[in-house]
Image: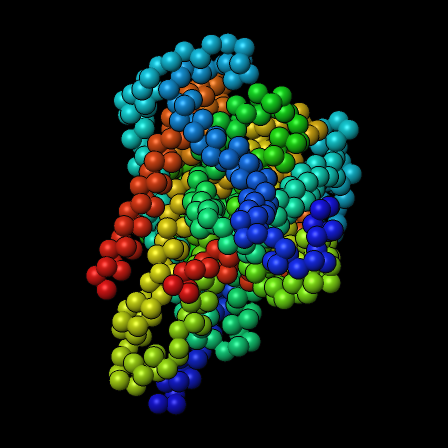
Length: 328
Length: 282
């Protein structure tokens, strides 16, 4: 409470400059201390720990509690993963899924953002509110609803396909009766539906961000281009896109990071961690570590690989942006 | 020319309606299904609107015992307990840190801000295994505090990032005036800054709440006893696997989703500006 007694005096006149600086300097660090401690202990330390764990053979929970030794295996876990042909399937699933989802989310989100900018005020508010609903819905329940829509007996999608004229359905898909059709049975179908769910969840953020960006662009630019005879395609690529490039850059990176580590939607759609052909890196890491028999070291190594890939993606992007700014 | 404009207007509005339908339909269908009697849910021709709305599915999940002695409400309370504890702790710590970066100029300020951005890029899914190790070592396995601790770490960086703006928006003159009137720093913080930042604190808290409320993987891994499950775990465990009981599943999903939607709509605008802040300004 020393500050209380000091306060009525005019501190600047009383204190030497050195004393004053020291007092001003220490407080912000004190305020930051709890935050730094939490981030350090709960985010940065585990990040180092996952790397450390990947060098050990850990297949018993007692090792984690510290009751048993940690046998050092060096790069053994990495050799085991990279030597397994299954890893190639997982990697291909992850990369293709992320690429498809980022592309589709960006395209749909941008189109919806542009659309919202062109609609009348009331219509725009209505559409934006509906779009918000998709964004606000938790990944868990959103996925459960999509699963219900694709239910093989009473799901709405099954009913819609049954409602197609039999001849058309036969010609297109080679079947007319869709009741009991296993929508999730082939990896391709599973990934298509998972893409639908993930894009549904993530396009609203892109749309709203693009819309926010568009509002910051002076509309005279667009009008001038249109008066000069530029079509919508040309206006977008010559004016809108260059102006919003930083926004698009951030959105692509965020989407890439999110889509590389999709977990909840896949876990719920697949009903757990049994569907190995549709594994992607995050669920693969989890299943190796926690499905019996547990292999924490191996799971940690996969988690490290996932983190490294994301690091490279982010790094490439940062370089790209820096280079663009140098050229400009 | 005029005809072309009308066609364009109709096409734009049509596209708008399609987007609205795609985005909102699953949410509508969830609520509609939860209100339909079973014969309507499983009928050969689905009805777009419940013709005989009923609350039987809600009654079933709220009164029925999912495991002996545990109902939906118990899981709901577990989730509330974890989320609220996370919110309180995260809000307190974030407020201190946000004050530091918004009110002071110090040597490591920029480094701290960059660090906040970078840690948000860490894939949390990669931290399940090391955090599981930490929870085991601390003896917190199979307890709800293990989840509070985890979610605190996850929500804090964004919470500080968001609150920083709110603290900076409070005019500094008010605090200076309080100081001249003889208030100590602690008093200024409590009586002047805190009330003015409170709305921002609410917005930030809602974000932390949603993070904790929705989380599945860590809750699935760190808690073993069924009566300690949070709602998301209980939903995947008891409902997600039984593919026939869509009525109760949709009722439970609705009860889980509605608080999130309400909270989300309250803070949505601030979340966008938080996530892409800096990108627009350049």
